[in-house]
Length: 305
Image (cartoon, rainbow, N blue to C red; front, side, top):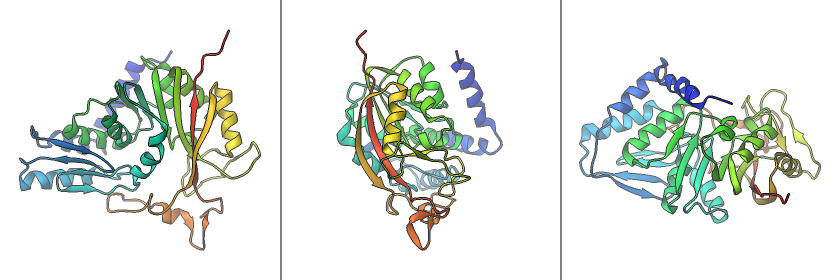
């Protein structure tokens, strides 16, 4: 059994790392406000009438300090964080297929918590985010300083879900599975983390084809080194079945487009346009099929004994 409390303590120490500590210290100095107004829509927006020009400047500088901002968008008063991903596109695509009201919800690979903040509007019972990455965690702390959502953020990964102190009614695992060298093992952990009758909402890269196979990039895929397996839909279904899931439903298939993922002033790295072949947008720079995503819903159903 994994000692999660010990692991949490080890992960929290990341805030003392040389490259993280200045970000953490800046977040601690953010202005304290009592007149916050929160708007939850395509962008998560925070307004206050008591911010001075100095406060506004410090908020902007702190937000810039903790880039790259992958998920969003967010607006904190006058600071609009135009994230690399227009995450509202994915959220709006998936929204008709789930209901989080009065549910215990987990988001695996939650990044800075954008999807969890969006779910607040539907009154879930509990929201928990899992992500072991320190910069997204700092971004969450920056946002939570103002929003005060009560979302619990765990510096844990997909492999820890099955050992968590409670089970979930719905688990979201969006853009994580292709980063895992053992995708079936990861799906098994998600399965074990669900209550009976629970649902998994999954999003991952796919390749076209009817065969039950997966692409295994030699070195990189779209310049990303930690992409291990990109399955056909039939292969992905088999992975889900092997993990124990039933009632596997394909919700949507979509090709990632430049309007959804693009370079902005809030990231200091390349983005989708840099990952594609300049002469053929249907290919990555390595010559593989361009990123296409499949969205799956699968259930944990108690089998008759």
